[in-house]
Length: 317
Image (tube, rainbow, N blue to C red; front, side, top):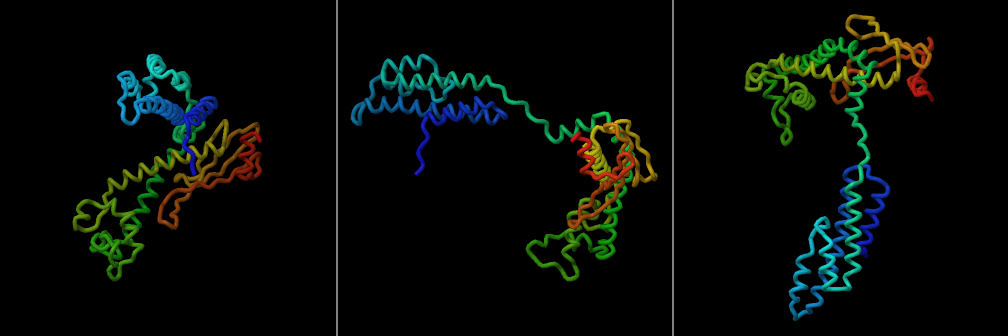
């Protein structure tokens, strides 16, 4: 059997949170809510005095009625006049009133307490990295790859479209665009093709295609999405590369081919010469999602170094 919480239980929890310091605004609100719950217990006790004094067959006196209905519902509306009124009508309410005034004082302290600064979000940390001196070097150089990244993406979608169009021809939209969740697929239509069409291709078709015309890609829409994809890929890569290479100084980047599939990154880290052979490749996972990967080989003072070992070097461990 669960025992109902008493006002002292709420006060103890709020006081503990206050003394520990508030890490979030929510924690501060929870402590204030506990004080309100404690106040409700004391307010109910005083109002019970009014009801009990009247008895089952006797109405409350005007003073008791004024006290009963005059007690504030919320703690932040409680004033010393309410204590004076309660003690005048029921001297035995002095202890409860003293507890309420202590709650008011604690509430004032909690309201004035500062909340610990919020830790930077992942997006803010990544933005800080991109704005760092080294991050800007990477962003400027690897930003040159955006047209190639976008071209990879466009080529992937075009490949999917051409395969489906060759297989289903003019019936591609009608056969693959229908809702088959509750009925069987027509003969010759593969479930994998339906999923590929609806998740990867349909969004890039022209309006005329979706309304029954010959299947055609909306090139402008596809290119816009590919450009956005390339921008996001470069930003993610810059953040990961900056985090991986740490405080690399004297950074130099040399391209081994015009398409950006291979490049060399050199620099200094804690007095060591660092060279990174950076590659990129375009892959499609088992779920059909296409993305770029960025494998790299790291050399320190001419010797191959694992990423884990380099991370220890960068952190000074």
